[in-house]
Image (cartoon, rainbow, N blue to C red; front, side, top):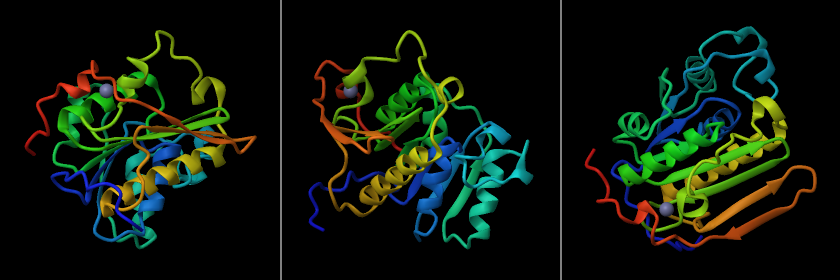
Length: 238
Ligand SMILES: [Zn+2]
């Protein structure tokens, strides 16, 4: 593959912070689990529910009510994953909390399930100056975007901020397990590209996926020069 971008030069490029151990997080972690040389921190406060099992592929019916991140870490270790995995039981839903926990990592993967936390993850990555891989899946639609702070469009460049109403979520609208898996694996692929500095990152292109039609679109985006992401002081020192 031809390098099309210089590596984003994170402080610790082999250290990944995965925010969310739900369907997206399970798929992304599993896809990353065969890669040597990566340290992975998985953060999530929740416990495993039976209604989640169809899409949260690291868990089984015997895990109900167990802590997600601890089960995820144990499951990956039983697969002889070369990953060094740190589970973090914490509800991180503000830029300050996410930035505090993710500081020192080379990239942030947003595998959360609601708009306010997605924008908090966006702001945390901007604050830390580390790449963000954003993935989302609800009902029949998924999307993916990689953000290089100060160098490519962020979620606020695109949307400004969270919508006033939450809108459809996996809780009230459901989501197809295969769609979640696809988006999660693509998040891992973006991470591999970040890690190796090869390929074409999904920057300034929002990939949208429709589960039933199979249609994919890469919607072109432009950074908004008035967005706060262009006025940050730069990467923080870990
Ligand atoms: Zn922006």
